[in-house]
Image (cartoon, rainbow over all chains, first blue to last red):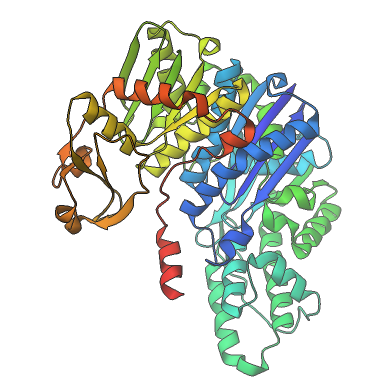
Length: 335
Length: 213
């Protein structure tokens, strides 16, 4: 079954075709990072415009890459939320248009559920349920017990900033550039992660993440150290602390749920310290670890198409009436 | 000519018009910021009413604004994809030319200023002569307080009621312009990409950045 997925929930326009949920036949991402860099963050109105301009050209490229016609597609899917409404509507409308025109099914896909599926897609595998999954990105940090493709138990989530947001804010404060995660990781390569002792917020609270206090602690440290501040050491210490905090919650979840699989996903899953921590935990607990390739960590449409395959049986004429939503729980109905 | 026209420039109301070779079918729908959910079923409704199937259509036509940018983008995203998928010609219309044509059809003459509000206290405006078939000039962004100084009769859509006489766009005006533009409409992939919402209003972030510069 060939599924065409569209992702436009934030600042990446992406189209992909995935066969049977595991084989990527074509995939393109048009990034808007350069456009939003001058604003220091994503401007929804600008992102919406760029999605409209970028979508059709990359759709055509993906069809060419897969050597397929649009009429060869069996099912169309797009991210319907959570995300920025203006950008979401562009992708959703295009996918619905294709489904409507060819009389094929359309499926709305949950952005975070798709990210979890990306961890398995990198290994050309369908997810094996149940598993412990964590989605860590610029907008999200959710730790879940995944029981089925649309059945999740939320074990922990952030009460303020997401880790990617923390990296963006710190990078902006230190004048390092945008997006923060990759810049901080690069600088941290030459740093000493033991140099600065940073707080581990809500260390013993296993149902909540908090990264806002960590941001304040870093800013205070930078103000105190002034010219003596070693930016590489600070970046390395910050990365280590974030990975430790994530590791603590993950370990608690693994101790309290009987699973054989661990999946990490989202943009921050590309971070070396986080990947190393997940690797260490999976070895210690004898788990199968699934992590997306670096390409599939950030927002992409392949994960949307792959996840649509898992929920394909829920497609019906009513799903063509789905709208976009800025905020929606994992596993919730779209209506 | 058989066509399907969509105008989503109004935040709350969507206009669809379909024509077969005998008759025009024009409908307004209360979409209340939920166009993306309702659009496929609304299109099915108007096509069924006009006894048309997708395959019968000679072209698609779309209103490019100015108006609700979200509505325009939903409509554009949908129609651009369908134009690509079905190799349809895509005709782009704007509200200025539709208002001018509607006034002509009513038999009005002389100079008019068409005012379409946009940002708070500002509007896009065009002044033209209804008896001359000239290409419309580029709209100017004006302050609403400047509207009284514009030449001729001031007209606009319902949202400009305080400063201008409201003109309802006539289905026949839409029909006339679609037929006039059909020959030169977007027909290949590169042309379809050029069909975009008109008169992009800078976002607050862009205006701030511009002010800093």
